[in-house]
Amino acid sequence: MASEPHGGLTEYISHHLKHLTPHANPEGFWAVHIDSITVSLVLGVLFCLWFWMKARKATAGVPGRGQAFAEIVLEFVDGQVKDVFHGDRRVLGPLALTVFVWVFLMNAMDLLPVDLLPWITEKFGIGHFRAVPTADTSMTFAMSLTVLILIIFYSFKAKGFSGYMNEMFTAPFGKHPLLWIPNFALNLVELLSKPVSLAMRLFGNMYAGELVFMLIAGLFSAGSWLLYGMGIVGYTVWGIFHILIISIQAFIFMVLTIVYISMAHEHH
Amino acid sequence: MLPNATLIGEMIAFAILIWFCVQFIWPHLNKAIEERQLKIAEGLDAAERARAELRDADTKVAAEIKVARQQASEIIDRAQQQANQILDKARADAIGEINRLKAAAQDDIASMAQRAREELREKVGALAVQGAAKIVQREIDPATHKALLDQLAAEV
Image (tube, rainbow over all chains, first blue to last red; front, side, top):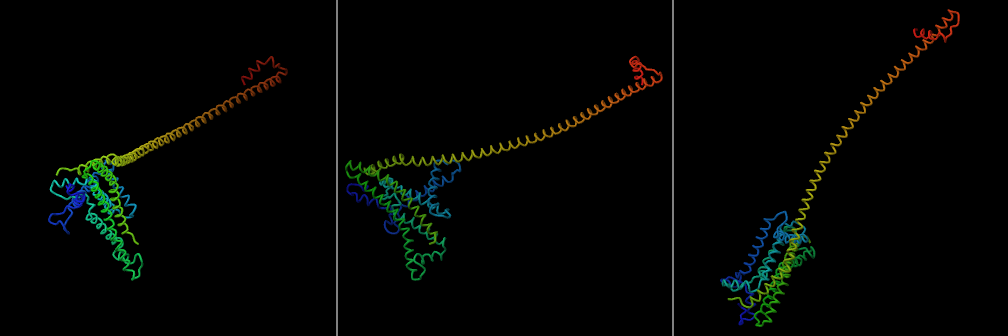
């Protein structure tokens, strides 16, 4: 492991911040982050399977513990959607549920010991493994750009091509032809800022959280029992605090997704 | 590579974190789940109870309607019987009264005829005495000949 004496904390951290990439393409466009993809897919499949199982066995009578939990999550998400969006929730509801649970699960990977998954993968000869997909800009941008596509799709769907274009060029300043360019520029910035802020907020929080875990983990190899104990305390406290952060970040991502898409339905 | 001090420290912290979740987070989730189950169970129970009560009320109402209908028909029957009885009694009373009146009238007639006969007899007696006195030209003492006269009168 990179926390060996010769490497020091800097090398330990920089080692941990390297993604697992194919040997053939360690750099560039095809340097796919296999670790992010694997973890996110596994968690996504787990989420789908679990909810599918609960939905299939759902009863109108007294629910079992699993069904009750699924219902609580579903009701919570649906309540959030209902508060913001007044329309057909058949697409937006499941979308919000997926975003919330999936992001939460991926964030929750942060709670696993930083060295646990890399230690396991090392047994199989894989040197770099980052467990938290949401601490990877690829992952967060993948989701926020999907949201952007949905925003544009629903804008067209709600307002029609001419209506949306009309809005893009005439709001917010006015209809005068000279104002078309400033209007469009402003609207474009507004539109593009949404996925950027979505992705960067989530990434920033998770990346910072991961980094703090690594810094605290540095105490473990500091060579003093006192620092070792402090490391355990610090790691635990940060972990408990992080439960809050991962929930809030998942919640924020979900709510903003709902807000952006419901804004796409509204006319200026 | 064997697990080093870093991984062990992290695992200890992770164990404490899991303990924290078990101790402080899971009970809340559990409570929410149980409350939900309880609420749903209670709601279903209440609905079932309400349905049963409605069914009970329906059968009770039906039974009461049946009883009421029966009572009504009984009352009607009794009333009819009573009316018939009254009618019969009135008829019997009337017939009795008629018979009584008829009997009284017959009695009256009989007694009046008797009386008329008596009077007639007396008058005939007197007339016979007068006639006889005239014929005999002397006074017949009504007291001495009373028995004779009475016999005469009775023969008239």
